[in-house]
Length: 334
Image (cartoon, one colour):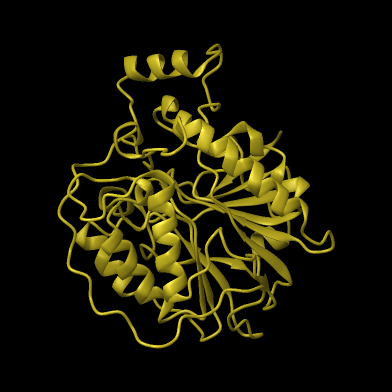
């Protein structure tokens, strides 16, 4: 498998462990109106609109919350894909999605690991599947599409394409060479001082393990994708990378354990992906993997985005495809 890296942010690093969780900010009043009924093609996707994406907003940081408050579409027809890690507290996720859904023609959300955490001081103490389902219900109330809704079709410029929000988790198969099992890999990571906070706050209830939940999500999602019309390309959106290549530049390679599953390695080609959108690694860049664009769209923590050039948090254009991708321009090889 070949891969190319473009616009790798200097000094970027994987989120090996965040700071302690503060108390969530108050939630503002929700906008009025009737929630949009999610359905294929829902939302406005006129010829002037763009499909854009962002992830890892982490609005518990005041600087990041200020950036989210400033996010606006360039046209009334823009759709926004939110690839997870809006925040850890249910109130914060509601606040951000309420704001964004009031501005963009359609918002599509997938959960990240932070939304699935159960912080001990969050008033909502739901765990695992129950927490995820609670967030899905909030999204439906706001007219935000989720992995549990029918996949919409983008009919704007760069379309048609099926927009497929995914929730797949990880199964500890992104192991370092020579490590044959999850237990060996976790022991190796702990020896290196790398333990993801998921091990303490992301509960798989009622599944016995996170990898069991991952297997169930992969099986159900694979069946849905296989049933899509073969003539339509897809835009796959998942918080975690769907192939292993994006994890190669991590400063701490042990962290890849919590970054995806080998079970989806052939999905971009198998399911005709025009683009794959992901976050989680806090390394915003465009990765061409076997001819398929994989776009990380994360904002990340303030200490990370302050080192980058450009406007932090500006949504990344997914469709129409950026000129460099459409023309086949190549970048530096990693």
